[in-house]
Length: 236
Length: 272
Picture 1 (cartoon, each protein chain N blue to C red):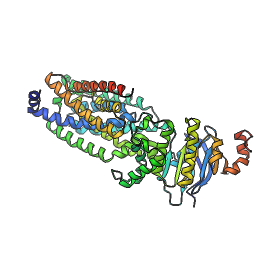
Picture 2: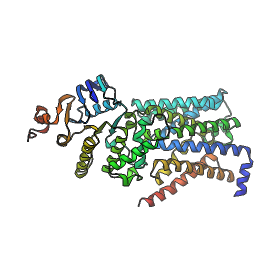
Picture 3: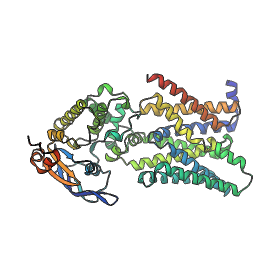
Picture 4: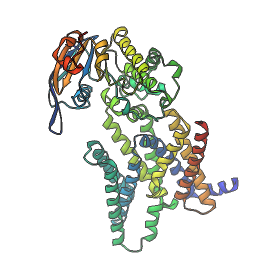
């Protein structure tokens, strides 16, 4: 069974439909990229998957033993205050909240999990640094470590490279690829960077309020939808 | 100085006021860090005005002041959060609307009775003598409840303060904890406003948090430092107000302002 199955999903804001007829599945180990223009419903779909927005119709079914609380999530950079006084360790540890229940303190295992994920993201030298004093790329790594604490199965990323310089962007894509292939965590990424999406993703969902395309990245390159979106020269 | 401190502690009402004041300062400082970081600072101010209105009406109707005020202010806190979350009205506008309405109702209630001018002054600017023995007991009990709840939910409060949508997405009931923060704030404000005054109580929430954020870079140290700063400023303020016979609430606020300015200067040097 698939990790996530979306059937005829639709969303609206104040009665105005922004996305509809969305059908797709995400399986164990998939790397799905959701692409589309601004206002095509990408971010709304992401909010729907995270349970932050109720769909108007259709269904989102979590399968394969995945529960709706076990999603790792990397929000858009702008969603978090830059000057928040918190150490890297405090931020990453807060990702373990979904395994804490009502207990007031984090267990030793969860603290170890936080340290492990800080190390995995190469941030161990900054464990006790202030989150706000880090560079944009470093902050993203910290938030990735936090997301990895929250999940073992699937990671949702909302425009993860927005506002990063080209070098850091390349590093970020490499890190996400590593998370997908080495840690066997499925990835769903919203992005408007189609070229990189094609380079890394296994599957593409092209949204333009309704899905223009859903399938493997290889098929997408041959499709009509990509030719319109990429401007015709994507076939090489 | 030691002699004067002994004199202060020889008065029954001073001992009570200090005990209640320390606990209120602690509660206000802890909650203040969250409120400032969540951009909810003005909620404290709005709620204190609602508190004034409720207190005035309760006095006119001869009802027990705290028993009426606390539920009314908690209800106002609920309402403010709802308006904020639903996005139907801008949060700051909602606060201004509710606080001025409550203030006017309080003033109307007072104007219906005569000869209450000193009481009005006490409500607005606080009085150390305003707390009866029963008030102090209630105050101590409720402050301890606030502190215990804050300690118990500390990690969740951090998660919801740092990134509400992440917390929500991973199954933390963010609106529940927002509600908890609002209720704890409402209780703290009502308890503190008799002594500090409705116009001044919100400073107890905002100043220690701002001071500590200048100096500390971890959430935990910010919270601890805010608690320490708040209690020290309160004690210093009470001492000065006793020795120089100045109003307690205003003196405590000025002590907080002084420490804040020192922290601005220190922070400036540290970040160079």
